[in-house]
Amino acid sequence: MTVKVILNPYAGRWLALERKEQLESTLKEAKIDYELVVTNGPGHGIDLAKQAVEQGFNPVIAAGGDGTYSEVINGIVAANNNDGSVEFGVIPLGSANDLAENLNLPKEIPAAVGVIVGGYTRKMDLCQVNDRYFGNNAAIGLEPYITLIQQRIKRLKGSFRYLTATLLGVKDKPRWDMSLEWEGGSYEGPVTLVTVGNSPRTGGIFYMTPHADPFDGLLTFVYGFMPTRRRILSLLPRTMKPGEGSYVEHPQIHEVNTPWLKVSSIQPTPAHADGEVFAEQIHDLSYRVFPGCLPILMQEN
Ligand SMILES: [Mg+2]
Image (cartoon, rainbow, N blue to C red; front, side, top):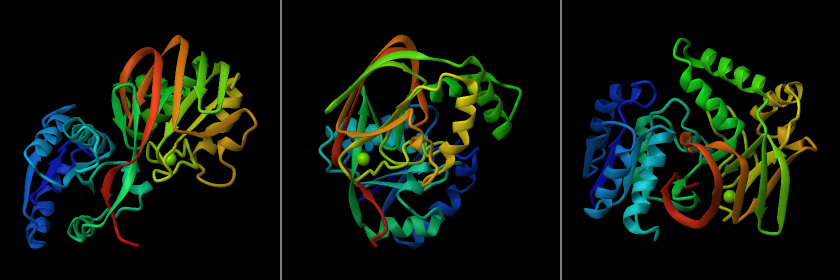
């Protein structure tokens, strides 16, 4: 079987392109029968992954960051109708690599190639929001609200830009009135955020759904309403804590496990899936999980 490698050259601020040569020589040394293609812009990874599956490549490997993994997952699912027959792997070359970090996958190229050679897979859950699939996390409310502000700030760079966007977002104190419905429960009222996780970590440093497990067959989502700027700011550092002291311990923050979640928002909200804002103004969202539908190449432990 021939391995398809889909490399996003922009991942990790062009780091991925710099490491393409090392990746190819490592694949050759490992005697892997492979074909490597490079994406040319947003969304291209979906088409390339879909073609790869249709042409019989298996496994299909995403070399890049979380956005790249997400596109390749969507392409695989689009081609094989989500039947779990095609294996998925990652070569982490992005800046955050949340999915790789959450699954404890090696970040160095030789070790990541070793995982492909090893051929051991585990069947990971796959999540869906409306017609998009995601492997790691999807959210509405404050999270994508801040992402949109960040995308509009052109003058600043890196973490300073992110911090500025966060403070501007908190200053607006956005609030949505939503009704949420999930298996065995519901909520109707104001919310600041709704974040849905397959895995705990997102955005490199945030544990938005700290108890999410991509192998338990359930979505883990967190919702809450923080009525004041002071409250939002005091909880923000606690979103960076994976364990004790996490923001989900706050009595107004709720973490729920469920196979599905339906959301209806009176005010339009932006929405992201795996970090990509796919709607700037949306009212209705439907989330579900497909248990064990994505065989992912991992280290055998
Ligand atoms: Mg889960």
